Amino acid sequence: MIYSPGCPVFRSDDGALLEEAFLVEFVTSPAPNAGAIHRNSPSFIGMIEPVLRERVSKVMGLAAHHRCDVMVLGASGYGVFRNDPPAAAGAFRELLAPEGPFWGRFRKALFSMLDTSESLRTYNAFREHFAAGEAV
Image (tube, rainbow, N blue to C red; front, side):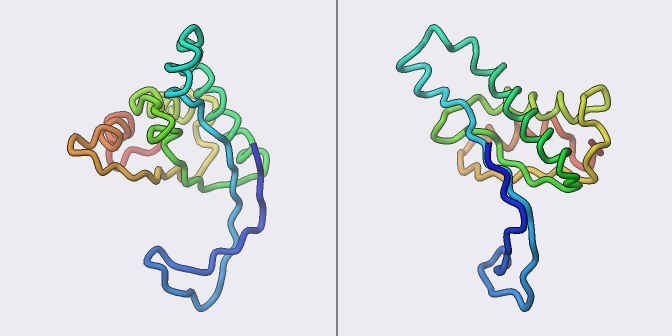
């Protein structure tokens, strides 16, 4: 895991140069590579979801330690690493829900993901775990 504080953002979502940069903090943490595990180490398949949950928990713990109040999270390896979107969404939900260890710790948690599939499998997994407008 890598914690990078004070990173300047100087472009908007559409790529336009901002008049004034603002600073953000990044936490970089790889998701388990489920595709490689399925291909090369099938005896470890049962460890994918627990490791995914542990890594998500560590990212949130590090953000909480540094008093971050807003998080923009990725979907934890659902793309090239082939992790299961419902399992990833469930891990985030379990940690952020009222009974979870990070309930109320963050003012806002947003998810940023690209889902170009016809079924919108990843988007729908997160939508099902985090109903629109539901506070966590």
